[in-house]
Image (tube, rainbow, N blue to C red; front, side):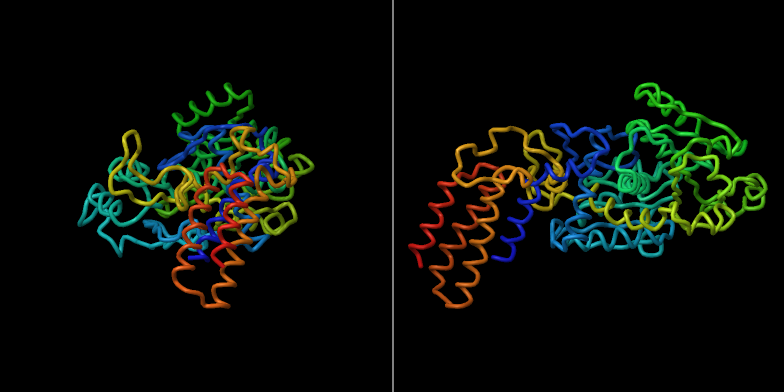
Length: 458
């Protein structure tokens, strides 16, 4: 139990140190928001506001820093399961999702069309309802966007788009995190897309302007993006004051760009079109010559797998290429959009029925709250005798003291093998104390009182 309490207190520390996180991710000015993504599907970034996408990226950045750089253990999804439906094979989507979900203590379950009766012997409606009763979320990598829409309609748990013929949102989250890490900002960057008007481009069109990024697109005639998506993107460009440019000339699209991006010319399911596509995309290979038309600080992205006709080795393995950092960031960004909420027996009035209240370990809101700043300055205890370092947020001293108390009790327990009565009393007090911390209402006097109670039972 003490081990779990220490994890709980460590998670509380993450939420208290949100100021550092927001400063670390500087894609936009940090603001006090009430972003709540609890139970939300992630089908397309069109459904997400600028602040909501920033929220996801802030959380991914923090998880990466704490888990990879600091070696922290954060079992935020302990006891939760994720159904992974794959109609299309993948290296990055599968490995990033399985390792990322497991790293947070969850259990991913990989399902192909050979494993389940998806749309063959069992309807999508029935599949959605069955999975809703057994898992906490579904990530689906499918051919048709309409299948995702139906899953989302029928399921009572969040549905995440792992890829469809229309969108690839989890890839774009990784791209934006990569650019943020490299440039230190997103606003004002110019992205040049050179290739097919496919699902990856569609996701960029649905989100780039929300970050103040300009977009220049080159596609061959007959391979342009969906006109309906272009119309929405033009509206975003006007709303956010960005530039959106379309051409059939790759060099014209690369002119002045900070980021050169391409993707496969032949997606899975398009193999019969290979000869036609190879002919249509002549001259669309990204080379060092293409880079000469771009900005001096240009970089290159590709969601992989890559073929030599799309980008030559000189660019792909050059210092300008961020493709492997981009691939790694698939792991960190897939960890944050869906920390699935646990099932609840009976939803409370006004709730979605998809999980516990905000702040409960394992809920989506709980993970996203890691990126949330204190809502009120009153949360800071101004009359505390102990100085609280500004960089650690409000009341961090209290949390660290409680973690120290847990460690002390654990050492005493194993060293002295005390009676069960003494142990139960201490465990109960520490548990009550940890619950108090989650609501940010702890005061120094309560902590001292708890310490005295612990000493009296010794």
